[in-house]
Image (cartoon, rainbow, N blue to C red; front, top):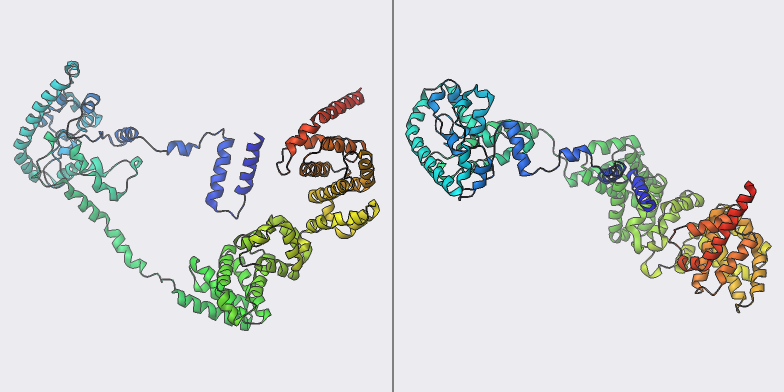
Length: 627
């Protein structure tokens, strides 16, 4: 649970990180909120989730009053007839007996009034039963004979047989009515014949909104209508194909876009790349000569450069200033930073431009030998102006890419501002300096050498301390001289740093180990520890978290020595008796689950009994005080 809380805490911090893309932050927020809602998804996901084909058919019945069965194969599917209310007897319907408006409203959608393009003579339309029983038809449903129950029990074979008879009857009736219907369609008022045709198409062309179909898909649905019926009831192929209608509908909907097209041509196309580069060069040259920042910003704004061109525009600004005096390079930086303030460019655009110019360095170096130093200045000014962060600059330069450019950027930043500011900024960035070096140099000693060579060792004061402190103790092990050396060489800010305490304790422990070559000299070990006690107390007193760091330093030291028998327990007892480390720190170390330092399991095994004693002793003391 605590690990899960840590994961979600991390997700929350990333969720609030404005530098991440919005879609990533939304996904994180969605997951965090999902957990807060006991893993119940949002209502929107439930309502708008995927639907089964049966749910879609049910929606069709609700929204359109149209029943869409599953498409049937050539061999007639029994389950459709057994499950649906559209039995053969219901089809025996005398159109003429209905009279009135039923000729229009009561038509099966497939057999609209008249013949012609788009009209399907489908007397087996599955929608017939639904339309007849609908209250819209003013009680005409009485003409439909109910299906006798016994029909269901006759079995599939007899059902098919009776069905074939029905089909034959309908086919004959179909042929007899063809001529009559054509005459009817001519004599009827146009509004009636139009209505009939629309009914035929509405089956597939006008689905409910829930179907979410595009107009483009409509023609695909049209041919499926005949296949929904038994083959014997499909209209003869000599008739006009039903696909005649959709193209007409398509033509009706197309004209508006055609009318709009001429308007689109009125918009000016964006200038070509070469033209934009020329415009950029003109703006920069004029700006560097006149130093009029407002005019330059307006010039860039009026260019209306597309987003994908912005990195190229910035790299042009940088390159144009490289062969000019230092003052002009600074002005070029000012222009870039102002463009960001005005919202015309982003830090990401600058990084792309910076890397693009870096790739051109071999060419540029012919005319401008110090191009990398100048680029380092551009990067340093961008860091100071908060156009980019140290981490953003470091990422593309990892593993010694363009080495030593990253170090040059840090050098210039310290020069332009100050060391302390840069040290804080660098530590906050969490950049791993070893990763910034070529792979062959990725170790602590080599890193310290390189940093000292570049005058950047101030970024890692603890590395210097680690290297020098043991030498200093060996030279003069008196507590006074050790304390004085630390005060002179280590910033007071670091005195409460866990890393500092770790190095301090490790140096003392290494010195004691080297002094005692024979493990039996326990008394001498205790005396040396007592000698260093004032220095330890000076830095550890009243800082429980630093005392825990001191215990971890002891754990790592014992682990490196292969856990000599009784050594860890001995130190624990001495630290406790000498009041170098307090009870709370011992128990906090026991409970801490940090995996950063090796050997915790073995260490706990060796001192667990003593820690249990300490816990009970502390409880007894608190009980006595309460009494």
